[in-house]
Length: 105
Length: 41
Length: 487
Image (cartoon, rainbow over all chains, first blue to last red; front, side):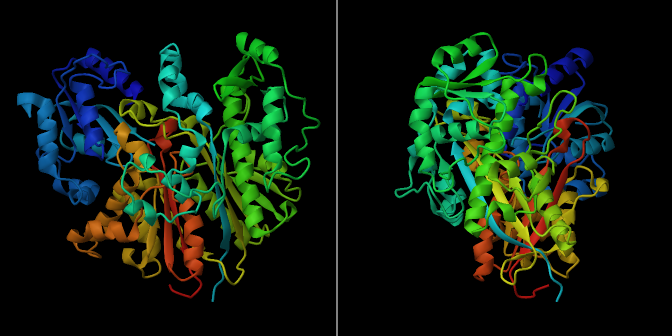
């Protein structure tokens, strides 16, 4: 993940506390999704940015997971993300990110 | 998952961009505290 | 029948610059942060010229192989050198480092780039054998007499006092790039090297273009540079007009020029602007030129190091296109089918594709399957995937296919078939604006002329948000069409 973004996320945790924060990802490829998820849970896997060795343990989701879809007004969801529904396997995303959320997902 | 939460939206240009995530999260009742879009190329 | 401007010819070139990888934006910062440790890790993973030459995506870029060749070739491509790889290709060439250093020096009018006397004695004669650069005084521009080569002690003294950065080749310091100002960051050596690299590589592409067309430099009326570099000083950061510097460098004495900038979408904008200038009769012809991007060298090097791969982002890439009035034979750029991304579309990719693809086709009663081939962001996936950045062209093609499926133009189950048939594997180096659809113009021109393609669409996206002035996405598209009236 971009180093500036790592720094910003760290600041946001300091400012708001981790309790109410949720990270929502939009990356297109599974590999990129995993890297981002790892960065905001157990730390930057590349050991390059401000989150290297920092375990924030933030709950992390992908915007195309079914659990999130149910919370968004369906017309808006269809307008913005209808195209993606054909391209992504929502269940696969949930399984992948569930692994980073531990029991919380 | 989103309602009442503070959301950090990390989008991607060739996936779902940050502003789109932010709009949907806000519509779901979250407060978006940060949104950004990564461009890998 | 309405006439449209045509793209008569395209040229694509590479300059293999392994020793400049360290000055790419990513490695430059990482090397500083690691106190040089990264440089020691990078060096053994840099490719030699033979390896870069025989790298299949580079041969595709130069036109010695079709993009389809990548579909059939097993990965990793870097481990399977092309047996009869050629330096000079159908569209241009891949220039070795020592020659390009000399070209950088020729492009320098301000004594910024010093090369050692011994190095020049060895490398300059090579350049004089070059079919396009042999002519006496080629590239000497208006810079006046060039100082001779420098001695190593003088070069090292510049580097020692922080006024210059070393240029290496074959394991030794062969020169340096000097800053032009002590306190103006716009004129520091790293920025000037970026700008010179763009100028010199863009000029090389333009020379190849003119050779392919068999026209003299004096025949060019106007140049548009779509290069991304910010040429200027602190009062005019990004002030620009690299176009004019490139025109001068190549001897286009009857041309003027200016720059078109729109992040990676710049080249598509520039081609549309060029066509419009020709169509309006403002200029007889317009050349669009895009120089290479030093900042992008080694951008994914951390991923390549981690996967114990060669550093694949070791080439500057540049391109040039000739846009002229209808000549009765070249593919036409349909100015009545340009796709633009309005402000109201915001950042939604769905809206972007509606605007850039669906809408211009609909204007002519066409659907997505009426385009034989789409060119999108053509980044080589072997470069991006090891860094966790995915396969950028595939992601874009799949979105395009999903739009076709949503509109009922294809079956949902045919998304992969649509991508396979109307897309292609990315073959361009990750040089920012260069991979943005337009390298395929060089492949499409003969295919459209020979009737192998009827219609090709070029779609480029620009990440405006990176500059922090707007959250908007951006993009533009155009259609190149074979001669027979289709729409």
